[in-house]
Length: 253
Image (cartoon, rainbow, N blue to C red):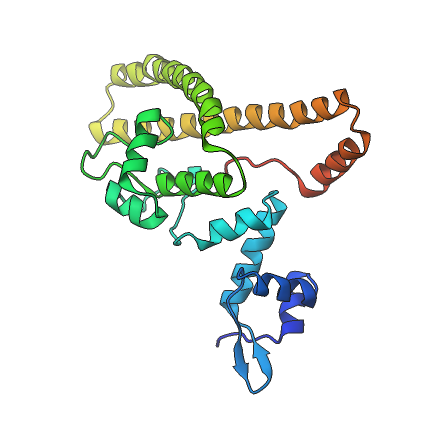
């Protein structure tokens, strides 16, 4: 049975005011309700969308950025922990990535050449996945939020070069301490492959979490230190309070 809510019930379900709910609706963030006479009726899709909006707000996104993100075509974006699940991974061509993100292939090629977009090498015809779509949508959200693309690319180049070095180091460690001992163990091929994939999944999960943790912590601390250096006492205290209240750290699931 499909759940139905009046506006007061829907607002109470997610813990916001009726006025805020109607504000989201007026901004186009929430689909219009079904009307029975003069009564507005909301359903599960409205509840799901509201929870998505509030979750993005909790992560620190502005309404402008949320609007841009929600206007993009929907696509399942797996978290890192799903990378090696038993579910077959959807593979995409550049044209399909372009269709899902609204970004022309010419710009996607430019992002790939600059190193921002990293296609997989195990399928030359369909080298992309939902993770590429998600990364591009996040870039679009940053740009729509007012970030100049040229200045973003300046910062991105530094990160890309550092990532290359870290990735090469992790690759060397994997071959030296995981693959070579595994080959020497004489395991059956299927068991060896399963262990190899499991070890790779663990390394990806661990290195990504550690790198994300270190980067986010440095940015948060750096902004706090800069505000303190500039004597922005009120902003500093507000940011500290809001950071603690919101749990302003976004690590891979």
